[in-house]
Length: 546
Image: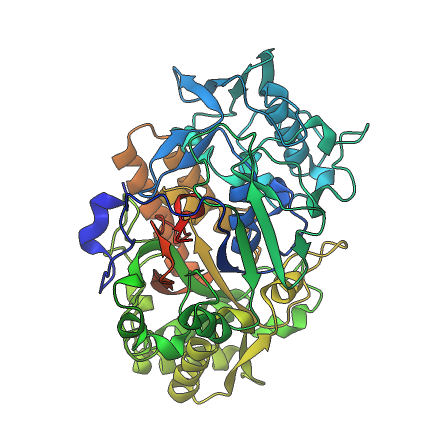
């Protein structure tokens, strides 16, 4: 599906890999790569950000995994079958173990999913279990749709047909957990996420493997007997304070693989790295969000100008005040493409001709007109700011977006940086009191979990969805989304998803900016470096010269 859209995708594709070289390299050599401090302890159902996600993919193995082009392949599953896209029979392959010696079996998945779905556990990925019969957001209920047949077989009954359900099962929310992960009450034991017991290609390299805000060291898991066996001696993910420091380390030989290039080096990195530069299409979407419903925000007054009719006018004005073409050319040197929807050109069903997409085009006259109409309802005051994490190389484009808004609308606009991704996410994510602390618009984006249009829409904009940080809710959008998810014909389903996007283009729960290429590179001492469909290096394939 991803490959079929390649003609539509972003500019300037350099080599995405070093090729499949015959040399096996030094199988004891550790690969160093950049990463970011996870927001939370490493529990699969409570990790929905990229820093923790790439680590979970190394530590755990789900029923499926995704190959470089996004196609799903069995990992722990022997088979996944259905006659009606509503009841699925899943057989777990025998012989797989967790690093503590426990068998990976039907209970490993059933117990993990039930924990993730239970309302009182408040897991960030609970949304992914919404379609299973018995799920509830409001109270603790039994997932009656999960039933054990035998030690290695279970069935999943959904509340309505979902043709893409098997495609979802490679995502980390659906990973298994060992019995040792749970206490007698079925809760994950304290400390499990700091040193998780996994079943994937890698494991923690000793009890001090996670040095917070510094790095995580992973060693090959000798008990893993799946299709992703490591061809190296381990993986060290280093948490750099800035991408500039990471890039400098790559050039000097101190870093083997880098999956993002600082904006200051977009014009030169392909010359710097030659055929070791990576610039290829990826399923990544960038935006910023202004909360739609401030009920769950500790400071709703910060968004007073973005509610009701006034808010809709201001969202449209801000979107039309952004010169996406200029920013992607000047800041990103053509490694981004201005957005025309809320998904990605790399996903089957993408359309660049949705009704209402003109709101994503630079139109300073219309932007000023709409802003003036909003001012007639309630005069603007204060500064418009966008919160972002300073450790992710976002300052350049945030400043450019704010300058475009400032110059077009004649208001004060500026970036609002936080030192790390984890710190920014802590303000955006609901706290223990169920409140979000962020007091401005904030950077948002999406790296696909699985290769389908629904994944760019449901988890982010559906009512109560796990990554719906702006608390958007639209019955019209939800209805179209549900109809599309239940439609067995993929072309008809995608038409409904496109209609759902046209609702988003009216409401603008997030302001789409652009689609990203993965831009990165690797050092002279490593071979077989490939980046997958969603921009993550395929770490287990990388070899290193001795």
